Image (cartoon, rainbow, N blue to C red):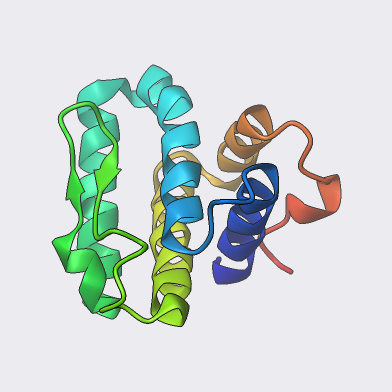
Length: 133
């Protein structure tokens, strides 16, 4: 799941070069948010994000300071904050998205999760739409 999450984040960062690490991961979450809200409602989307943060925060301490806003976006430490190592920001972003994707696979299955990802990023190469690599 982490490799898949890293590919999604890299794809998102390539479309917005100013985004990297946690910023790109938060952007991935936001882009998926519209589709997730349609699929599970705003309450379900927020619940998914909150559970994702609990799971990811167990592995990545700085994510414990991240919150889900009322409109279903993530609000966390400023990526320009020098107190968090850039590598930790990047790794935290990967863990965050991997946990989110893992929860989606558990709730709606692998096929529907990949279909959702393809709807959000239609230009993502087909070879990247695989959890196994």
